[in-house]
Amino acid sequence: MKDKTTDYLIIGNSAAGLSAAASIRKNDKNGTISIISSEEYTNYSKPLITYYLAGKVSLEKIYFKSESFYKDNNFKLILGSKVDFLDEKQMLAGLSDGNQISYKKLLISSGGSPIIPKIRVVEDQNKLVGSIGSNDVHSGIGYAGKSPDKVNYPDIEGVFTLTTLEDAIKLKKYIGQNNLKSATILGGGLIGLKTAEAMLELGLQITIIELSDRVLAASFDKNASEIIENKIEENSGSIFTNTTVDEIIVTAGKVVSVVLRNGKKLATNLLIIAVGVKPNVEFIKNQSIKLNNGIVVDDYLKTSMDNIYAAGDVAVSRDRLSNEQKNIAIWPLAIRQGGIAGMNMSGEEVKYQGGFFMNSVEILGIPSISIGLNNLDEAAGVKIFSQFNPERDIYRKVTIKDNKIVGIILVGSIERAGIYCGLIGNEIDISSVAVNIAREDFGIIQLPADYRKHLVVGEGIEV
Amino acid sequence: MKKIYIKEEFCIGCRLCEIYCQVKHSKSKKIIKAFKKEQPDIISRVLVEEIGHNSFAIQCRHCADAPCVEVCISGAMLKNDNTGVVTCSEDKCVGCWSCIMVCPYGVIKRDYSAGKVASKCDLCVDEDIPVCVKNCPNEALKFFDTGEK
Image (cartoon, rainbow over all chains, first blue to last red; front, side):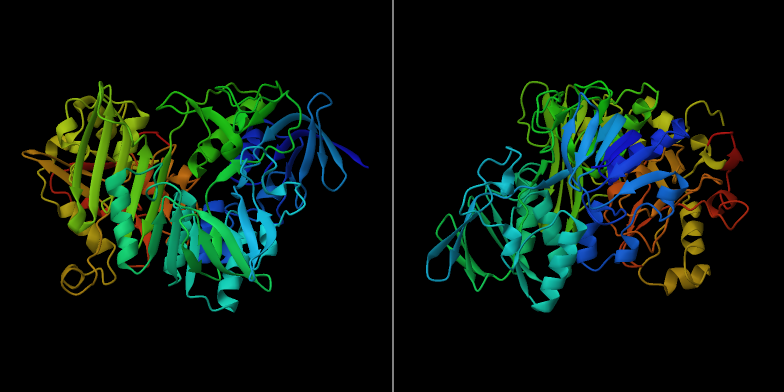
């Protein structure tokens, strides 16, 4: 066993980790910075994997940092190595390759892995083989459970998840080799719909199976979900809601059909499990780092341990809109949190202002953007303005709480969405303009005078 | 860096800035051909907003801390370290619309003519003065350096 030392250790080689590494290097030109990844790729943009699948991005263009990025910044990159355990007192990380690395400052930006719900696996003659997944999705053991009848989902031909580039490469190859014309997607949330977007671009027919009563239940409201569902169904896709996959039927090791909880049996050679992700925290084995469905961080992105920070999909941080500690696993926040954590690890004291949820997905030519809290009921202090035009596949809804925007849904008409994002982020009182706020022609000209002047003229500029 | 500044009080909403921007970003660069022959319609990267007698033209502000660059998932949206100009490389853009989601000015548009890419003001880097500024009859757009990054 070799012992190595580094000034800064970063677990994770994606958005948060690399953004942190870059900001550490700005402050500390000489400190040693080591980045560990369990994957084999130098780096790639995770949100691009569905675009790679759809054929919009080649493997050469999926990298978001240049080849020379590591060398130019003198980062040490350790690929294909998992962190098995942390010893927070000794300040060292034990790696799957047997090495140990001791650090002065640690950033955990280990991201998330797919949640695999418990599903029975049955061989064609009703012979129970075992099951994949786990009911206890937040236990941290997930699909690595220990029961004797455990089946590893990657061992079943035609069953996939889609959270890494490797997943996408395997899936693309499988679709090509088997000349598939249809895909079954378990999960109608964000990952499920991003997967659906790619499958549709590839010309596959899709079937979506969703446990709640509609797709995008967490980020959309009923009207918005309905537009997307209708569009999918018009294009000969199928959606089954209020149900899930209870059984995978295999023949000669390959999926041939799935049985839903409602009893329906669907023939399929491709099942993509896309119900969500859970933070990668298995290597945190004692109580010294506080966990709560992810790693809890303070306003400086520091964990409960003094020299350990966390950022990105693994972190639980402040949601500005609900003022709760939340795990908001989105690319923009991973970049921002990583950047700030890096600054704070290297001598600065920068406060993380909190973040809020946002997402953009385009299904069958209908673009959509949702930001913030979109399922608040009209009550004291909450006002909703909306425009619903299902014939044109257009829906716009603005949720306002205490005179400030807290939620936006735009379907079919997303132009200028960022104006709303700016109003949310800058906490602008929009009570004077609220009546027009959901209109398609809503623009800067309608904004409250002060904020509009700030945007149009710019601060400190007299012209 | 040199940026375009807006003088709202001189804008009469004539939209010549939009027209010259469209021509500049057309294939032919000829006004009649661009408007009569080129399909689909060319997108103007400057946008005139107008209510009653109030109007102004707005285009990318080339922000110092550009949110569109921060959220870009493909590395297409970049701010040039030397010039400060924010541009979108159309060969890298995948049309995820993250930039549209966060631009507080609402000045990035969807362009389906060249695949599916984000379209925005490139500050006419190959011209001395951006065409919208140059062709504004009222000097409602100004191009100068205020020392801002």
